[in-house]
Length: 160
Picture (cartoon, rainbow, N blue to C red):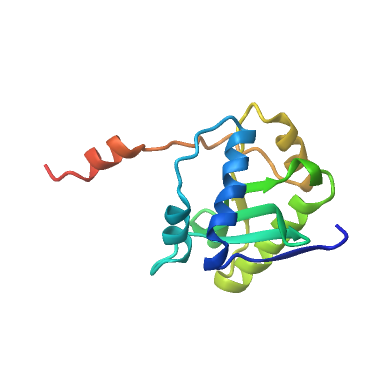
């Protein structure tokens, strides 16, 4: 990781952060609907919904971690949820993902006392799963990720 620095993303980084997240979406053959303004408002607005770290090499973004707090009653502790983790193809295998996750743990422990880290990974992304398992992550067979998308989200919000 020679010459790579990791720092907290700031408002001025919103477009660069979104560009890296767009690359992540592309790498995963996933959709990417967030505009630079969406990222700016969500992460750096009046009530931020995430924090992010940037890994930089000569001022180029080569890695990103986006995270937010969560709480587990079964663990009796706050934790941190990493919603997005990306390392540029040219830098994979250099330990950037591990260092980003370590920095996330430090930031989350310092900010809200996080005692565990959770993330999701696509089942077909066996390379990522292998990396996470090597770092000590376990697959939680007791839980299933369930998502309420926009239309259903709005329907649920409607008062009957």
